[in-house]
Length: 342
Picture 1 (spheres, rainbow, N blue to C red):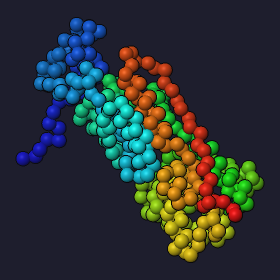
Picture 2 (picture 1 turned 30 degrees about the horizontal axis):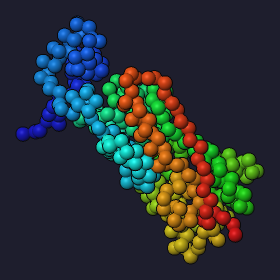
Picture 3 (picture 1 turned 45 degrees about the vertical axis):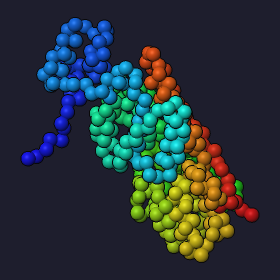
């Protein structure tokens, strides 16, 4: 016998059946007086028709007893996400809240997010590294749980983003000041706004120094792990640079993990940084500080912590405010031996 893929009725089903918003169903369930008798009757009829029974988790949320915040992101295995989660977790430990993680994967992220949210109640949601369309924004805003964005912005939510153009510009300008004129960039297969801005910052720095960017200097790795942000991609891209671009003396990488792979390729070729090739990364993950890798510091843990604190403040509000804050972080360059001319 074929098993049904849906074995329970959710508050979303009740709202759709009654033709009302999810928040209206929630008010009826909680006995709120802010619902007309006609609307209340429609919701109660839908509950009876669908045989809907609110689960204990949903009831706890209505009573503000749920002590868990959720974070949804495309991956939690890459170093960038690990740093972000450390910052989030450090704050949640202080307020004695649990952390629920939703791995959205690289495809069908909106569908994965909706499925996650339909399974049970959370006090609030941190949505990290996922573009928010107006359709998704409407879905998120219709729920009772506040949402805070990290890595993307939308006018209907608090958000934390980075000035990636400025970060890339600072990295390349540093290499230019070290005397390099032929600078390649290892970028990724991912077509994201942050990748676009990093390429633009790279090209702007070259042009301002009177260097015409060569399109062949933009190099991608073939493996495409984590959208191209992997050690394997960095290693493959560096091998391409060594084999095909002998004029290049410095490389700016879109991420630290790419830079770590690039350093491995240099070692395998009997070369080193910065003697034979200056290398600079992006993110400034913990490993970079130990191996002497110059990198653009995005203050990832601090941003994770700040975003979690903002979300908790939203959850704790007595009334819902629409005074949303758009935080744009200016990255800082951390210069270490991989890019320094001695």
